[in-house]
Image 1 (cartoon, rainbow, N blue to C red):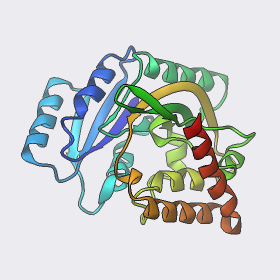
Image 2 (image 1 turned 90 degrees about the horizontal axis):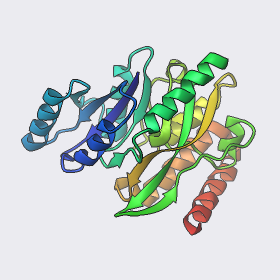
Image 3 (image 1 turned 30 degrees about the horizontal axis):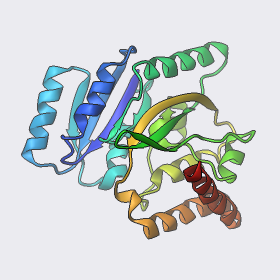
Length: 253
């Protein structure tokens, strides 16, 4: 089963595009859990209507003890079943083609048949502004997962399926990260040498450009430094600088 966790906050005008892309999927074994912050009545009435119309959709109010978008995602971690594959999307994300879930889950089935299933399946995504594709979010593999992270590449969380094995190692995002808890999560996982990671050359998601993380640059840079220090100690400047060098080159491409 593929479980999508979608944090929301008065974002009902954005959801139809996401939902239409899901309903077009050739793979039917998906479900969505909306974790809603303190939205207004219009938004929550919209969620009620969606969930009444489609049994694959449900929503929960966000626990005030788990604030922020990553608090909502932690609530999603807790809601996952023991065999679910988790995918975290925003209200303004959507599937770029009707067969992307089918291709991702078929790859997981093939990998499981050949050997032990991976803990993470890392695909690709693209930012889109209007109708124009923007920066790609491909993960650059460099022999091992830890080396890939050290050389500045990180899995895009909207294009990374998180399996039961990863959640058995780390089942929530760390507190103190408002913008970069996903980076910290992937970096903490790399400390386990037994972690199994598989990449798949599949564009799994389109993402709208913008958002709070795109404007709070100083806080994001601080959190990224903290995440790299937690994972790599005194070596943190190397992945930190390489990360932004790759971002710069990707923007020029």
